[in-house]
Amino acid sequence: MKTLKNKKKAGDIPLLICVFLMACFGCLMIYSASNYTAEVQYGDSLYFVKKQIIGVVLGTAAMVGMCFLPYKKLVKFKYPAIIIAAILLILVFVPGIGITNYGATRWIGFGGVTIQPSEIAKYAFALFAAAYFSKNSEKVKTVKGVLPVLGVGIIFCVLIIIEPNMSITMCVGLLMLSLVFLSGTNLKQLIVVLIPFVVAIPVLIILEPYRLKRLSAFLDPWASPKGEGYQLIQSLYALGNGGLFGTGLFNSTQKYRFLPFAESDFILSIMGEELGFIGLLVFFLCCGFIVYRGFKIAGKSKDRFGYLLASGFTLVYGIQVVINALVVSGAIPPTGLPLPLISSGNTSLIITMASVGVLYNVSRQD
Image (cartoon, rainbow, N blue to C red):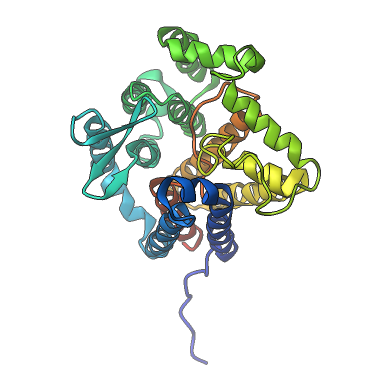
């Protein structure tokens, strides 16, 4: 009998299907949350959803492409990735390139294309950390050994916080600490690394007056119902109005320009209003499924780089979902942060779907 050569595993197909369906669901919710505002501002109720559909198409292409790019080759891009990410973060502050909206300069524009560099920086950092720790497994047992990763992470955090963008800074900081822990460093070293970040949080809040106002609004939003507390109050109205089963798809009232950023940072509030607690429960189960599959892929990886890379990319998604949910529910002070795969915004969507393609590639290695 002829022996057949072993073929590569099919990989985690359910993960790809779930992510694609989530992205399509995001288009549906963006239409529901934005059609009135889009009609009033742009004369086209489909304005935001058209852009998102383009993002889904490009994101799907990126995801499929990364499915077939052997993830081990990404090690070669660890330095180019962080250099490009750092340059993009710096370009945010260059007049004529950086774009300012609502007092924050977080985007860069080239022609008609707008990019949010901080979304790219998160994944660039995860790639660099995974590559470094996989090559220097013994060095991570000392604080000195993790300094290169900490250095890159701190540089990214500084560039992001001065945009200002506290939420993405928190994501990068939590990602950095998580990867240091997963790299195998001992608990004492981790505590030494953790102390400066614990101290930095109140300092960063005190240094910026707007953060103090947001903290005050978080503690008592009704103290300034037409000011800093307005957005959180409207978000809570939306969630409360949804009840157990929701008002029904397309039946939100808060989207009629009561809730700012209904199609982006606070789209979860509209979902809660229209789909109710049960709908949000199903949604978070889907998010949990993505995180579970990501860590399962990491756990089954047969090399250290694949383990850390899959863990890092999964953490980026999971951390961002959790922070967004805590913000819209009033559990932590309000801060702008998109809900991955759902919120309006193509940079986050495309890079997230591409990262899932990498996870799939890790899952199909023998």
